[in-house]
Length: 399
Image (cartoon, rainbow, N blue to C red; front, side):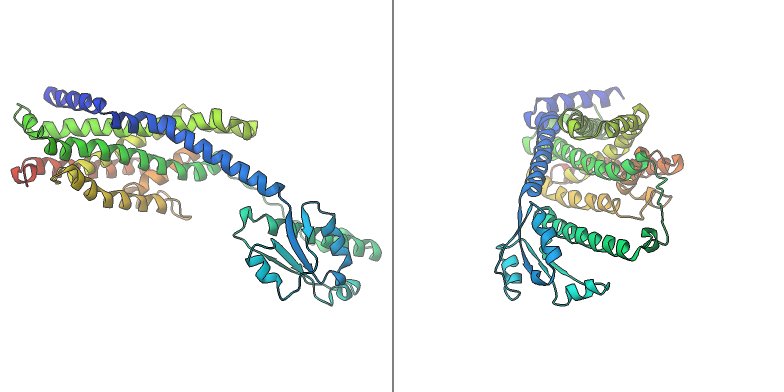
């Protein structure tokens, strides 16, 4: 054990001397990531405000058949009616961005309204537009006129307004806000865990294996009294530590962004709930999920990178791993997939689902234990393979 810790101390010193590792470990998650996240949030917020403030230009085809509707639309200061647009040209004008949208009124519109029948209108828009503002405004305008017509019929016929609503259904959501947050925030956090932990593990693990091969320093380490097993475990401990530190730094950066970046834009009541949900117990359980995940990533990266002849070859060999690990993370976001005895056996998917359950406060200890066992078992197998390959001279010194 003493020689293993000596190897780990040596690798840690080498790692901390590398500026790229320090940038990846601390500067990127604590400075670059929150700055980019805040920048994206502010940019999106401003774009949404600008889209809401802009006036939309539309065509009102057949407005002579619906003078009341034209009056309602014209009263909206955010809608500009462009005159002289024909029904033949309106679609092309919208596709060419010369118009934002249109309302088409049929000839029998007013006749059906006067006969207390149901009239129809058609709204043309492009859902690919900025925040789909045009559709919302046109639907609101038509809905306003529709309500005016219905209210006029009720008053004229002396009817009870409740006559048109035979059943008043009241939905009561029994899910707590903590459970709702678990399904939303809990699905986002595993992305950060995977990105930061795997990136850090790949950077450090590749340098400790293929990098040392390339520099010729691996031979010096192999000539020491330490066994191959102790060398592998020492490297594994350092890679795991770096991966966990990177993930913790990402969590801290999220807290900083929420607290000091966008906190003023979130209602105070919601912020109180957020901080009450993210209590010491929840944070501690999330931290325990990082340990088996870091062990799995570290052992897998070390096992793959040690097979490479050079640093570049190791990076190429690890790229498929990066693509594969995102598949279970995406599966964890799909509806209907929950943490059970089966999904707890699937690496990374179990962490994604367990994260949501931990934040929701609905985690099953048995399923959590299965998730731990699954990840540690795979980490142990990867570590065993790595020791086996470390014991083969043709693996360490192949040309």
